[in-house]
Image (cartoon, rainbow over all chains, first blue to last red; front, side):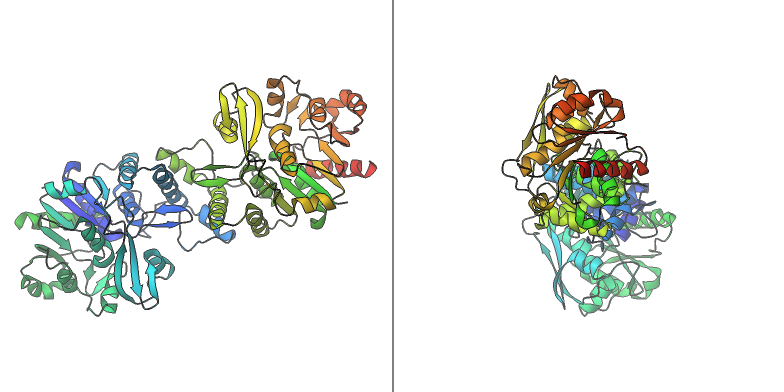
Length: 304
Length: 304
């Protein structure tokens, strides 16, 4: 079974890792949101790409959910001493990724090629693609005006109330080389448990059309997100945060939906939307949970 | 006594530190070569400025002669793993200096202002000035063609034979704010034991004229340099490397010359050039040597 998985940060990376433990390299392509990318301290930073790659490579910091394991902080500590911006905590190992990515981008290399080279250096065998090589920047409309995503997400800690989202540059953005090819050849597209508003929607707007069956895994469990502001965003947009809200979010393109045992009470409502369902344990606290959930999802896909 | 000290890297930084231990902040201005500056990995790097500042701040790595004490190398190690250029060994703490400097330069702040702010953050009370806020780049004419300075110095380890030097941009370069003022108000200008060709000459070409007495400390002892390629450069340019060669280098502007006990045999030749001399121990192996030599130099100046 050939799968394309759409992923944002932590949750998406974990399921992608589970899928990679089961599927062979030629059967899994992970297509990653780049709407969170930004330039900071002169560095081009791709948080979701890095989280996915670090996770697949076994380099991720499992405690923080971002950045690298065994990280040190000598650079950012000293930037702070010099009065520089230190609100985005860049670790010393992580900075290497940004420095070398920035150097190559300035040389004219596309992000997809850089990602391919980095994956090779990190020993990642499955294909990881940025959604596009063009700059797309998620902008958050909020009660304090429009904010660049990382300004909202990290600097302001998601405190401003959201009113909507805009993906600056998305109209001109072509899918990265390999994205269309993957979407043509796979059997199913899996939306990993990532934020529908700011992780999956940007990818959808870039690829525009999906002609294959889509199965989504809910990032909302019992009305809450494991990590990140998805539930808060739904609430601030006037939608009760729930797995049902996520299923509704994708309703026009969804064949299958995976929700947590905690939400089994809404399974029938989702079935009524003419969407097939799998109710299982979707929490991925331990590394072994990733493979277990991926296995559940693949069996569910096989049954569709 | 008010002093302006011209300095390049390690040797210059050590004597500047000795002078700073004796003179009050208002009586010492250190004017630093920026011809070695270069852009690498997207970072603006000012090696001599950093060596002088780290040394004055007590942050310098006394073993390597460059970079910071207690340094870690997690960034550059990972840049190397990604196939990036790692021949210029940037430490994690050191990278903070370059990142924040680069950020500020791109914001339009002049190097002199950035240096002032960094000195304040590092607790340096004496004035440290880059020779200019304009880009001046030392180019090395060699038997392998013209090389940018750090390419010659670090990447090629001074292996190509030098034929001469050119300071790209020097014609358009104005002295940094404070340089002219310092040179007008000091009693004496001291050339620290730095490389005449590539550390002191660029400063001289920028300031153009010195109307105050000049005292130079020889960076060549017994025909050799403590560190760096000055002796090798003299030899490749067809000049026997010696303290005499250094005195001759500066002969048109020199009132006093400080040479090592090891070179006492050439004192009389230098006196014949109508240059006053001080023969003393000019090696600065231990921290205490810096103050001792500075004290000797200041007494010598007082006697002129």
